Amino acid sequence: MKLEILATEVIKLLKKSGEGGITNANLSEILKVPKRRIYDVVAILKASRLISTTRNREGTHLYWLDSSLDNGNGTTKKIRSNKIRVSTTGYFTSVSNRGTEVIVESTSPSISIESAV
Image (cartoon, rainbow, N blue to C red; front, top):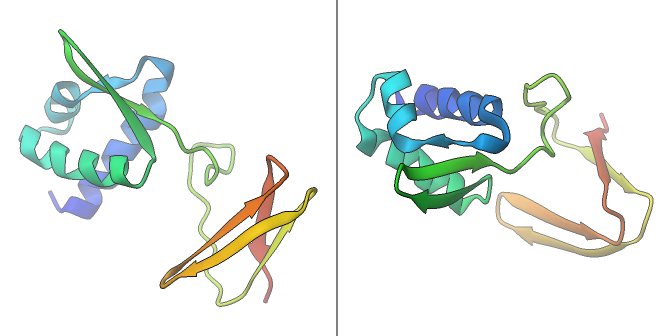
């Protein structure tokens, strides 16, 4: 299984697992791939701060954290545009450019992003 497909399947299972989370071993068993492949995906998701982990006797439990890209029906909304509009009910406190990403901080707990073509 390609890493891209594996990552997509892992994310789907993490989102479905809810507050109870899921273990590395369960992911490996369900997806029928070696644990080391799961570790590769988990390392990327953890570094991206999309998941959190806890360890106990049953193993490492994984929990999905990010719902900001979830459009309500469990799928991720992608914006394919070279121009976007960002709006908030508060004030923008910081906008920084880090190569291929832009980080926007606001005083409001919600920020709206849409295509501005």
